[in-house]
Image 1 (cartoon, chains in turn purple, blue):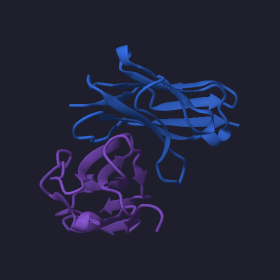
Image 2: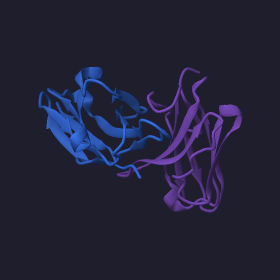
Image 3: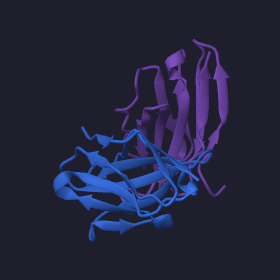
Image 4: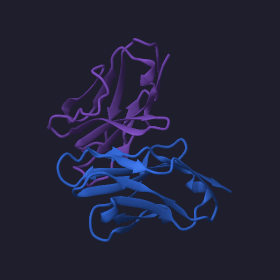
Length: 114
Length: 114
């Protein structure tokens, strides 16, 4: 597709379950970001992948959160033992190069932990 | 660490009123600056960006922003808003050199009354 694709668009899960969120970036984009959007909190940076460099994981809120990017393309964000405070919209963005290019966002995955 | 502050969380204006949304950032080095917009039900998209040169940048839909280095500010302006400008606006910053991790502000929700 032409844009960043995220799946699922909505996910309802029970507290304590693990979830996986998927992001397909725009083909050829070397940079990939995950952000979390909560009401009134803006966009919270989670993790940043750039090419083959080690990812910047400085925004991951706890060790229950992890992400990988396979083959420099598709990325998966995994949340283990979900908690109610994990409920938010998880946004993925990709960018063609470092810094000076805009980030192209997907529609997001709305995660609800019940 | 970088941070981005948006001073107004909610703004309500009548059509034809002028708009200015404040944005300040904390990083003292070379920065790239962005404003993104999220219309209801849509994904985040770029409104305008500043990298270097003329500190007054113009974006889509009549928006402009001015980079004032001495004030660490990048305020967004529009002389006359329309109902269709109702959206959430996010200021974002990344470093001009180095990690290029993009940090977003908390966002400003703009509601324009018809």
